[in-house]
Amino acid sequence: MPAQHYPREYCIDGARIIDPSADLDGVGWLHVRDGRVAGIGLGRRPDGIQNVIAKPGLIACPGLIDIHVHLREPGGEHKETLQTGCEAAVAGGFTTVCCMPNTTPALDHVVVVKDVMKRAADIDLCRVKVIAAATVGRQGRELVDMDALKDAGVVAFSDDGDGIEDDDVCRDVMEKLREIDRPLFPHCEFKILSKSGVMHAGLTSTRLGLQGYDPRGEELMIQRDLRIVVETETRYHVAHISTAIGVDMIRRAKRNGVPATTEVCPHHLLLCDEDVIGADGTPDPNFKMSPPLRSRDDVKACIEGVIDGTIECIVTDHAPHTAEEKQAGFVKAPMGIVGLETSLACAAKALIWPGGLGWSDLIRCMTANPARILGLEGGTLAVGQPAGITLIDPDREWTIRAEDFRSKSRNTPFDGWRVKAKAVATIVAGRPVYLDESCPWITE
Image 1 (cartoon, rainbow, N blue to C red):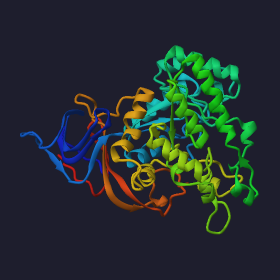
Image 2 (image 1 turned 45 degrees about the vertical axis):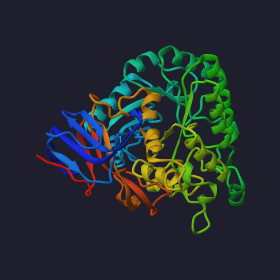
Image 3 (image 1 turned 135 degrees about the horizontal axis):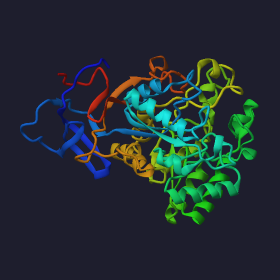
Image 4 (image 1 turned 30 degrees about the vertical axis):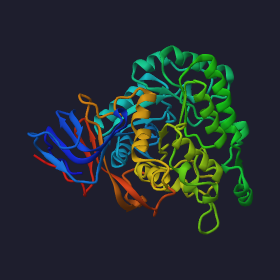
């Protein structure tokens, strides 16, 4: 988007206004002044508002929030930088992202965390919040200085990429987090059970002769953790859930009043382990991630979990890797795919177009729910709040082309897919930081 000056006051008129935080859904208007929401309503806009932007058919909603993103800085700048990651985020409609701590060095100290936050603020695109490591170096032994990290602005704690396998350490982490009122955001995996598997353990892994990742590695850690959550009453948010049993455990915990939530990635809603096999009959490294693509039954269970509200957030687990790394062969290739620029369309393909979910519910999973779970600013279009807004064209059909990504990396299983729904404008504090060529706007 070229650098231009935009009016301090404008009105988005005639869009479908969806604000799940206020149970608002209907055609109306959204008035922005001096970076904040000045007015909102359904029906005809009030007289006297200047700088009207109108394009019927768009959805105007709170800025999308992704609470599970790997921006790779520090230490992984060959894969992604804060600059390219933020550019990818706003192109995908995200006004806020939360970066995970498995960097080099890990985000386990105030100095490192503050440096990331300052550099992200200097880039001045989307808001970047930090999820810090729960243990020093993400080694699962010694707790980080959680008080200091909380004071620095950390919103949650996770050893993402590794589970906290020691029961006593996990309990100590949860007790401390309960004290400072921050959630544990675990990567659930007992590696003695997952056995360094490179894909889901099943018929396809056997057929390919590949080491299978036993889903019990994920499920038994969730089970262990929930037992400690009951004891400590710590807020608990399971990262990238992928199995039917895991979803059901969270469902039952929530029914029993346990403070547990979870999230799912679009790739775990659209793809299964059978899709790993490429056109040439060999496994494609762009379909390799952790947790791995699971069985068809697991995919169905994850979709049902979103529909019934067990799974409250859609996230990307955006994990950039270079082409050279991914071309090392399926066994040696690193796990992870990029997702910031494809998340909205892929989530719509999995949940809206088959008829399982409506736009209001999907937007809730990408705005109000993640904001509530991590206590983030945003997720609302309430009058007086900073104007974080995403404009979506729900009928826009387009082809995903990895070569066009703003992200520094191209590792996606969705290259070439025909999809529908696209963010056409991303607005942070009233300022458009991304505009699609199809989106009208007023310049001064």
